[in-house]
Length: 281
Length: 317
Image (tube, one colour):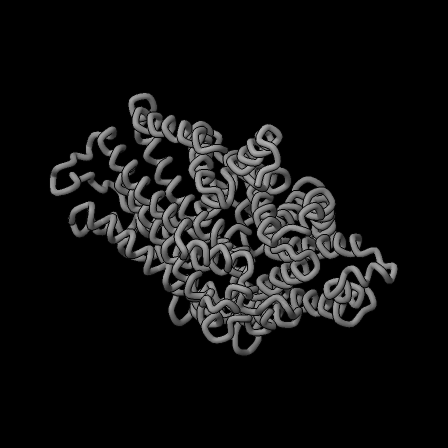
């Protein structure tokens, strides 16, 4: 049962990361390969804030995504905005290159072995069917809240409506007097901040290390292929669902736990190539 | 570039290739040739079929394991090892390709990447790959039933050169055949090609399998040269490296990937002591090329040459 709980926690990260990827892809038409590196930067930001300035976890939860999000905004302004007119491929390659640079620099400065981050909540709660560490419970709930808030923000608010409209037809939305380039920059910042927030939440669970996002981003790509990037809710459900499946695999057939998500991806491609929640384009 | 100039360059390269092992360390040259073939195989898919595979290391690395398994564990001839590498990679390409071509564009890249990661995890756990240690000490056995001894690096170099030329020639034939023309048509406008009666998916799958098989040939040859097969060759980092090689040289140019492979392998050779900085430099090259030199070295040079020679020759065509 503990494995299932762990699966749910992993699912929380998958959901937040694939949500960020989907939001960015919808607006920028770029698959953000830097997502894993930005997740790592979030964790590092929290770790450095604690180590150098004694900033507590709860403040980092807000500060780290802001810092990393700002970094994302700078990258968007400097590099990404110049390649929107090109094939998707180039955005993929550009962000892949940036991920190499960022991870290489962090590895060079802090090495690749991890540093621990003390858990801000201790103890465990008996949920009746299983005992779950309080912090992990908090992560699952926090991720759910963040995901639903993002969904609400995009699907139910005025800003979200602008965003969705600009995704559909940027030229027309611009003609209505809305600053679309700024909206794009903000979207990228938001997506990156989501990744960083996931990183902060992950810091007390995993070791904070330069390569903590490297493999994760590959799994999240599979999650995105399975869910399809068309729907916000789809990303959330797929993320949590796959985390659970992974957790269950750990219980019943441990050797396959690393690969089960990719197997699911292959099955989904066979049965419904557009993804569970995607529309064929 | 006119025919005469091309012939001179070709002759020059041929002399260079034949004389090289007496000047440069042969193992380095052989490694570079293996990566050059690997990059050409990748480029066949991206440059001519428009399919961006970000998981080509699975074919390259798995073929190395197949070679090692056949030659070391089963103790068979190296020719059979190469064959096993090529067929194994082609089989893997058939399965992953059939699934991956169900999605287009950037999804295709993500799917191949995910499959490669799955193969990587499989290799970590599978009994015949040696896990973290890899397959080490694959003895170099003589080729053609003892006719060609391969312990000598210079002799083996010419074998590797022949393998490379075979692969390169095969790719050249594919591209300039009717099959290659249809591929290009699909790349440029899939719907139109379909409406003309071509089954785009079958062409794409065939291109994918061919590319996988040639990447497998490169991987198996590399295992023969270096006498080991490791997890590095199936990792996502290697998949990224081959993309970088093709990109540096020039996507969709026939010689670009060869040039790119030599540049990147040379760079890694000199920066071997720099550790993490190799990653940083590779990343920086990605960024610079995507931002400023999307045609790659060979592409930009050809363009420059054309621009230079046009005024003298008058308006072309």
